[in-house]
Image 1 (cartoon, one colour):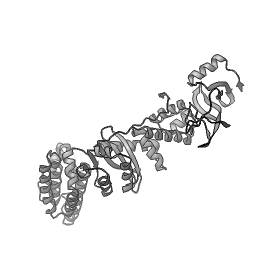
Image 2 (cartoon, rainbow, N blue to C red):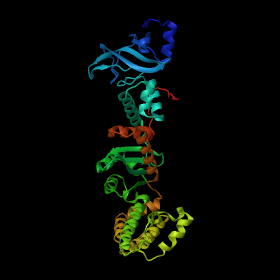
Image 3 (spheres, rainbow, N blue to C red):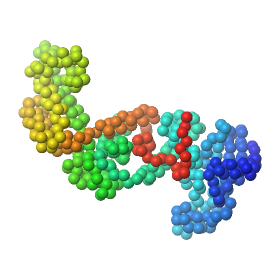
Length: 422
């Protein structure tokens, strides 16, 4: 062990590197080669009165608590700041530890070291950060959680204009989280546990009436809970809720496939195999078909098969998203509804009933030209986060990671410079 090896110049150099000012000063450097550690001792020189960190009132010293913080490594050794931090006796807040300029009150790492960890976490997994920096998983999780909490508290009162509401799975068996995103910035605004009404209510209650009134569109699937919550909180929501095109057309495709399967089953019993191996033909967009697919599919779609009729209804529905004026769009969708409800194909009639119930939201989507496409893009990035982390046992950590990577937050501690990790 080597101690007391710092000269005046050395102490001055360390003070400047740590950006310390009175009353804090570097007292000594302790080297421990056997532990591959260096400890930088810092003291409060008493040149300024102690103040309560809660109210800023000058208070008498109560006692000192020995603490240490992980700092940026030096020459391959782990570096720590060590200090006997004063505690004050405040008449209002009791005995509290004074704030130190190099770290958060609850943190066990310096701001500079946390900035380095945050940069590593942006690039790689927690396991890799743990190996590279010799840091425990709980410590890394604490740094990340503090960063997200800090970022959310700093988030400006931005006014979202176009919003997407979607869900993504945490685990199997419908264990989902609700994700609210801002289309303009491409960032996640809120992540809520489950798909309950209270989940979206919580986000809405966090916005002012002015912010809620500035929302021009809310794109979502046809989940009744999300619709009800938006109608309860967003002014004029009846003209702003847009039922997402992808979810509507996915339901239509599923209905076509259900008709095909039922018809194929009855045709096979009669010894006819016209529909065998044709599933992808009925569900593939015509523009995406190969020339061979088109030649093979042409006689099928022109036939008198029930599946051909269901496919034609679906194709008409797909063509109705290009209207500009609300009145013409409404007339076109009503004509589609009339055909769907008279087609005598129960799966298509079920889709018709769904469209009739949500027709106002579908017309909004057509006129406003919004969809859940940006939310689906975020969903794919969330899936990549899950893959990188090898899954999650704890939903809170999953939500924290979504905010960390996709929230567009200012994560870094106050005064810390971003340390790019290479």
